[in-house]
Image (cartoon, rainbow over all chains, first blue to last red; front, side):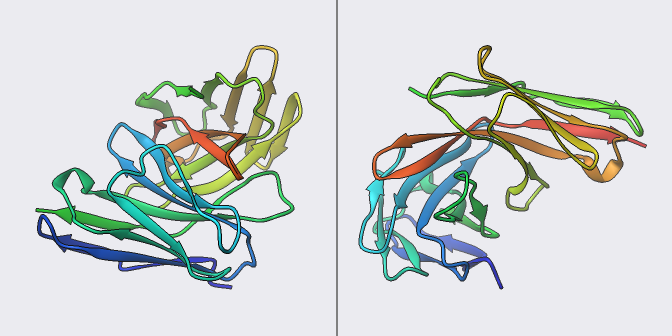
Amino acid sequence: NAGVTQTPKFQVLKTGQSMTLQCAQDMNHNSMYWYRQDPGMGLRLIYYSASEGTTDKGEVPNGYNVSRLNKREFSLRLESAAPSQTSVYFCASSPPDGWDEQFFGPGTRLTVL
Amino acid sequence: QKEVEQNSGPLSVPEGAIASLNCTYSDRGSQSFFWYRQYSGKSPELIMFIYSNGDKEDGRFTAQLNKASQYVSLLIRDSQPSDSATYLCAASGASGSARQLTFGSGTQLTVLP
């Protein structure tokens, strides 16, 4: 099993550009999550999906949209990137019969100029 | 607002010593508690979780939970330089359509050879 995979690993955007961060898991997990991590701020939840076809806002959803394409894939879209969205983005998934533990992908380091 | 508090450190211990990492949480409804290790430039890796009061041991790691005091700790015995990392504490809770984790900002641990 590859676990949770994310693409791309690195990305540089100009202000106003758009892009989609991809996430996939092969562990048959129901719940998936998108976080951003900034220095000194810890992990902050952007959006999450409890199951295929459902998505909900987390703590910091402004400027982002998500799509739960199927059970495996959960994408995060920046429609008009801003310098404040410079961050490291992590996708995570959680098994349906566990204790709420989450498993993380390798992350995408995004810089918006 | 649910909060998880950790001392940001940095915490330095000599090789072979016991490292003690502490965490408090605000939501009395939290059921499970997690310790993640994050090496610089890498994603968080789950190392332990605990859901019952008391101690839980796994190799050199011991997690301790005191729900009355809303306190979680992680002890690392016989610390090694390879344990040098940031340790994130997280608490689970129900909010919206899926279980979520609230993360602390992390404690940076350095083990000195």
